[in-house]
Image (cartoon, rainbow, N blue to C red):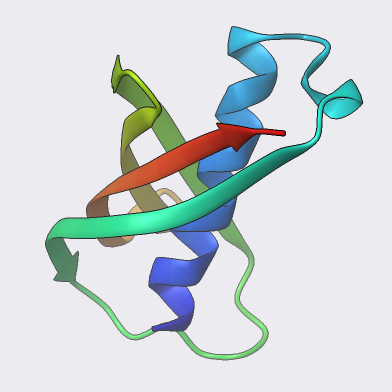
Amino acid sequence: VVQIEMMAQATSFVLNKINPNITELDIEVALLTVQNAKFRKFVVPGMDLVIKADFIKNRGPMMTNDCQIYCNDELMSEATVMASLKIN
């Protein structure tokens, strides 16, 4: 669950690439689906992790990202994460 949450949080940084002024907006983000989740290795406290999120598509208020977690360039887990965006 924690790894999925890390990946979902990392997708919010992708929004900075789409709109550099994103921090000035009041946005609500909700996790909708997690697909193709694979946990390849154990993640334990003290590991230095790198989380990558690649923007795949955007349809209306929904955004899909492919995410991976690495430790020392070794793939630890991966998932496709879909979130809804609501600009207030």
